[in-house]
Image 1 (cartoon, rainbow, N blue to C red):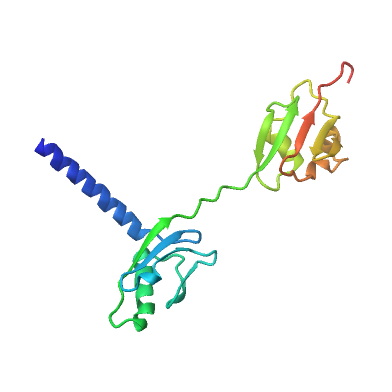
Image 2 (image 1 turned 90 degrees about the horizontal axis):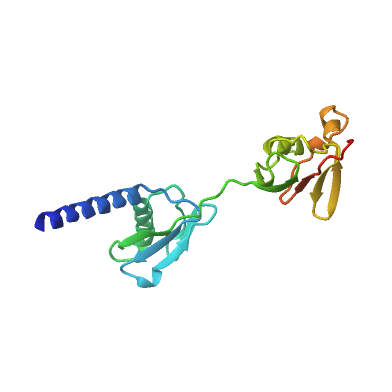
Length: 192
């Protein structure tokens, strides 16, 4: 039992050391939340959000750019700025209370119904054109009425003729897709 306890203790110590190393190397970025503690003056203790321009502001220390700094660098900078207000250099501790939320890649979601090879919700890169959207959802089935495609944008309905886009007589293929657009591809009639 003692070997197991010793082994578990070593594993926990290694995990703690690895976590500490990662935290020491982390570079603060806008949107992070920092916990600031000044041992000599608890009235300065607070939780601060790193602003979009990468700064925090602490009474007695003023505004400080922290974007790209490590926790140790921030602690040192705050202690230096607060030092004139104390007899002895203050003990400042900084910890990361929360990380900035990760930004997702922006997408434009459209919907495709009817005679398409892939129907449903389709995610496109912003700026995607209608012709590119056709390619993204894999084109049309053999039963598609490509002369009567509809682009529905809110209450507006636009009639699209795919053949005219292909032969260059229509510029509708250059229309940029918007969030929530619906492409309706009807089924062809018997002699269409």
